[in-house]
Length: 240
Ligand code: CA
Image (cartoon, rainbow, N blue to C red; front, side, top):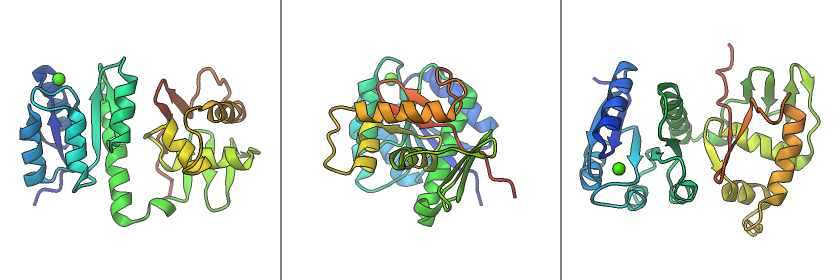
């Protein structure tokens, strides 16, 4: 029986593929490579990998189409491998159902962190516990107790408005993943919110940063993904 998580890499650039395969093998993942979209789709259907790493620029197919085709029947996490300057492409991929992205060139620790987050998120979805997952977020000095709706910084309570708390807890419950501006606006302000203007979101995030970050210009907890959205530092495993 093979209990290693299986990862499929769909990427036509051999050097990137080899780098990822070597890295992931060394960290105890089983890796399958595909260099075209068609090959990728048939391997996904036959092997049911735990995570899909997907380059959007494939020789035979638009990566966005591949995401849509997979999402018709499966919620396997998809992490897109994207070029640095293509914010709009990242947003489109996220809106079409990919879970996260990683920007070229990327390092080993970033790749492993994205995969860990995707696997953790999938387990939570499968267990149906997403709404009530770990009751506490913790990273360095910051603790969020979801049951008691408490935010603590170095043990001291931080006073947030209702909206600020909703924002922080949404990001913290999805820690390690990027959430798009649209997604956040709809989650906080409802399905009819005007998402053409994310000014109100930016203002609230600035207030939150002032309350949580020692230096808002160099955040430790909540990062801006320029042109895409926000990502909260992955929660540390709660101590037991
Ligand atoms: Ca490519």
